[in-house]
Image 1 (cartoon, rainbow, N blue to C red):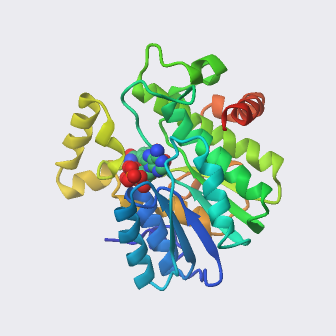
Image 2: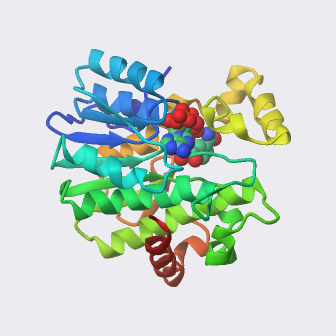
Length: 296
Ligand SMILES: NC(=O)c1ccc[n+]([C@@H]2O[C@H](COP(=O)([O-])OP(=O)(O)OC[C@H]3O[C@@H](n4cnc5c(N)ncnc54)[C@H](OP(=O)(O)O)[C@@H]3O)[C@@H](O)[C@H]2O)c1
């Protein structure tokens, strides 16, 4: 199966001497992103919730000479991103790439410290982690921040990002909550690029990945739809969906490739226009302020 770095056209890039952190690297797209960056020579730090899965990916990275460190943190806990940044800071003050990949689909209405859980895990955690790393001086000059969003983001709009909407779980809809969190990823990237011109901040849609762990907590109809995709014959499946490996290509491209953009949304390793709401600078600014208030 073709490697993500080959799909992204960056196999020849040498990342020796570079340090990267990939969140949510214990499975799916994040695991494949971490392995690809290790094959390219980077030192790779990985994050996840599960110690066993963390040990497994760290062993695979060690075999590639990536000198890995596994950090455990559950992003449902509001303090965990800041604790993670502090732990990473004990190992490096020169982080070249942060890949905000960890993400969850939450089917049940749940809140964490007064905030809807999907928004907490998928948006507030990368927001707080990125800011804590930046404020502590852990980023190298010109560091790249890659945030894994989704093509589902156009399902959400400004109304989904009000304080009331992100703190309540009345009339909960898992897909809408997921879409809102992914719209927040795109707006966060846009505002981060504006506020921190020394960073290169971009986000991406990885592809549709029925074989990742994302869908395990989805509703029965969604799991059934994803399950149906998985039984399609390989040549058909390849046309409509991605493997975790091929889906890592755009993250790998943004981590290692040549491009000029910051604040952009990419798909298939190309800049792509996101939804109108995702291009709303006023909304991006308002979301930043709300996120500062809700993050911890
Ligand atoms: N799959 C798709 O079709 C698709 C499409 C568009 C975008 N995406 C995005 O791609 C990214 C990777 O997803 P994936 O498809 O590779 O799914 P995955 O296999 O479920 O991987 C998600 C990763 O995030 C971690 N994670 C989940 N909840 C967490 C929490 N509360 N605290 C800390 N870590 C947590 C998971 O750890 P555990 O193993 O402990 O759960 C896992 O390492 C996500 O941001 C997702 O939204 C996926």
